[in-house]
Length: 453
Image (cartoon, rainbow, N blue to C red; front, side):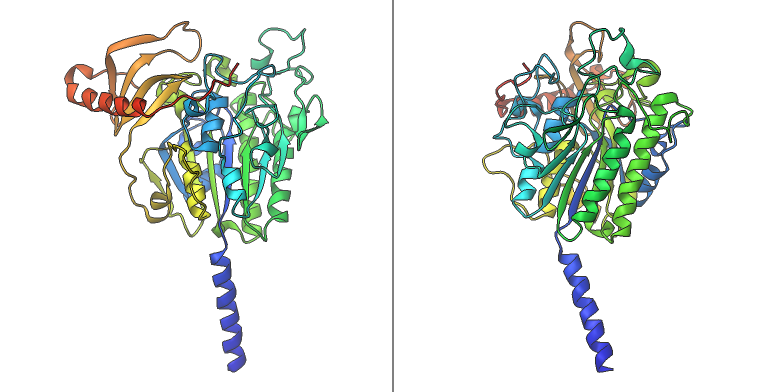
């Protein structure tokens, strides 16, 4: 009897130690994935059983936003918890290019840097696109290790590449000279893009297994479904949605491998996994451009289709399964991760995100707050509750100049998520509240030194 008691006490103590261990954090970030591209968000043609299961076991957001309509600023915002205008990671050029002089400023505090201070192992796997110069690279921004591409897979195109090759359903494998890097050193150039999702996944599984005894942070920004579109032989030609669907279904497989590894290693209950996208679908790419579902426009615009994206939070036993209409964004991930790790918020830094823990773990509503839609360094729109006002509008691509609106356009996103019915004439009081929120916001914004040169 005494032996049994001692054994039970030891098990209880061991279990308590496990529960007391700092939670791991994994962020999986798709590139140009639209709101309507997953089964759990209504896609009738792309099969995503692993993400659908993740959504059914976790919390699926209906109103989750990227902080920008294109990739460089959206990545800066996710890692810093700050609007890109504050770090200078936005502007007329929209994203960083191989010949850009700037990058994520060294003074910015990333999730990786903050968690590393708490003893976390940190890893970046996938597309970086936050700078290739000293101070802006993954290992300069808090990551112990990095494996992936320095920027988008359609950059470094060969000089004789035919126009439109990026959006082709059969892009040339040797059309782009982008390098695959490990810790800043070239592993392969050009990168074999048909193998990227598979290799990213293998690296992620290896990292999880190697670091399972200590807390870790894995940031996994995938290359796809950004054009040019590639898939491995195991997935190519298998989707009803063509090569775009093939790439998304392989991405879904990758998520499944990561979650299965966490389950196998007994880490699932102590790991927050968040899946989302950097912006909406690149609609001008046609069949290779994805879908925003019922939302208007796509990548490049501040209409809902450009910035409202899938958002799924998963932590079995901690996050109650469900669907939430609470407004949240990628900028909330830094304060959430830091709160989980009991890490202090960056000092003397204005954060634009909020800790999602009360919503995730206690199903409590978040405080009401406005959400600001920037295109480059210009504020285009603001959402307050279910109301959204557009001060300027511009399609993602093809419209040379923005159109200013006075009075602003006004839509009720609860009743009109497709932004078809402008009701500004009937709700002057709502517009006044939104304009006051914008006035207060702009009074506190100090733009950073422009980096997208």
